[in-house]
Length: 133
Image (cartoon, rainbow, N blue to C red; front, side, top):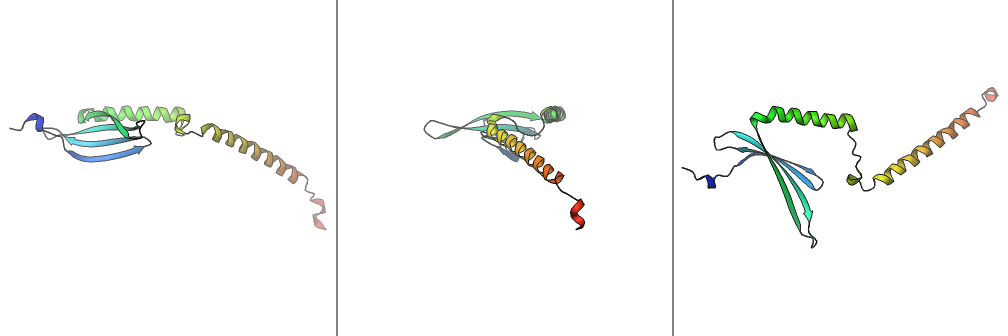
C-alpha cells in the first residue's frame, strides 16, 4: 500500500496568467481516488534590499462540487465591478503617470474645443454671395 507521505498530486493540466508582479496558476490535479480538482495559486514577486527576489504564494483548492457556485459568484462579482466602474483601470497605483495623463487629456480637450471654436468662426466668415464671380 502506498505511503500517504509519498503521495504527490500530479498536475494534469496547467495554465498561467501573468499580471504585473503577480502570476496566477490554474492547475488541475488528481485526488487519491482518481478524481480531478482545481488549485488556483497567486504568486507575487518581491525584491529584497540586496536585489534578490522571493515569491509569496497563496493557494485555493476548488473541488468539482463547488464549481457551479464558484463560477456563478465569480461572474456575478466581476459583472458588478464592470457595471459599477467600467473596464478601464483607474487606480493611480496601476499607472504612475495617471495624474499627468488626465491633465494632458484635459488640456487636449480644451485645445480641441478652442480649435473647433476657431473653425466655426472661419466657417461663419465665408462669403457665399461672391462665389459666382
